[in-house]
Image (cartoon, rainbow, N blue to C red; front, side):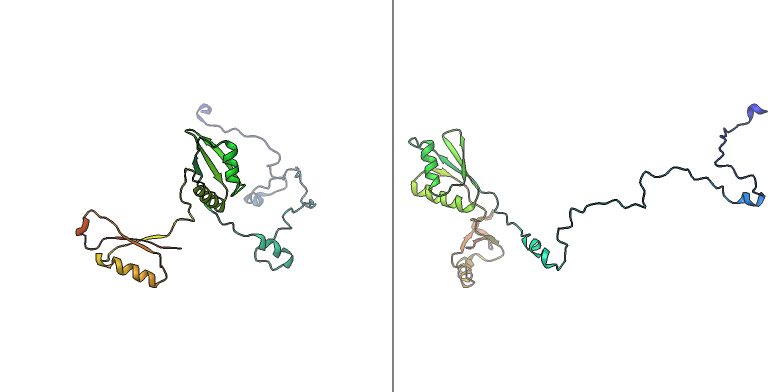
Length: 206
């Protein structure tokens, strides 16, 4: 019969055995396991000296006058947006020195990027420099190509639902509100001139 009985392996451990002096009443209580004699590598009773490298930074909402100068120094930087380059079509008589000296009349913060087909891209770092050189090249009569900057673009709006005959009246009404140079243009639609209420494109001035 022993071969049909399943036996479980038992490991003798003195740490989990009950003391010999305990009676049957004590056996109802859970076993008491002996704690290992290992000690932690770090002694929690001794405080380690640490240095707070952020102690000089200002605290949010603090009214300390000493830290006020740090709080006032945090100012949001306004993004100017992408400044398009000026693609100059180099005239035959213009050399590198002539190109550089011409641009230096208006700004010193730029760099040149030569491209194929006798063209050079003039890269700028500010809107003022882009505007100054663009106006200067117009005065010089040099052929170039550039794009409208984001700060140059005029606000536009499309008005729908108005009859066609109010195109002139719309300009007069905008002038009353202070938009003297506003441009009103009727947009074309699929219906052509038969559309009773065509959309109007209004370009406002800054």
